[in-house]
Amino acid sequence: MTILQLSVMPMNMHESFTFTQPVVLPASKTAPPRFSWLKLSRRRLVAWLKKCANDYSDAIVYENLSRLSDAELKHRDLSRDIIARDVGRWG
Image 1 (tube, rainbow, N blue to C red):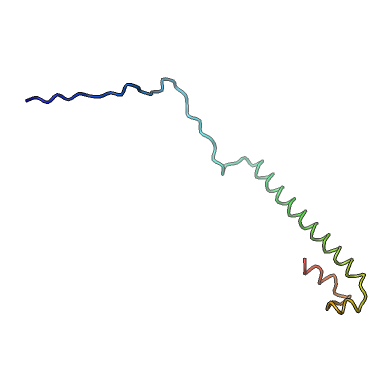
Image 2 (tube, rainbow, N blue to C red):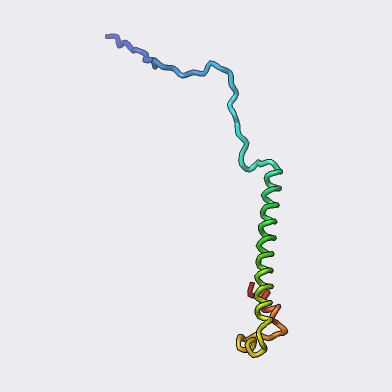
């Protein structure tokens, strides 16, 4: 007895008949130096702005405390000679 084997081929074959090169996108870690320079500049600017805001806030607190009398400062456990140091430490 002979066994007949049939070969089955798919009816739709998807082959590419064009010679296009695959597109390879650069990895995110290899960003151009311009972008890293801009990011660094942005971080420095934000840090500087935050420091300016903190210094301004400290100046306002110092100004308000310096207007108080010695008795009011003593009530708050502060001394007139160390207000600036204490205000800077709180910020």
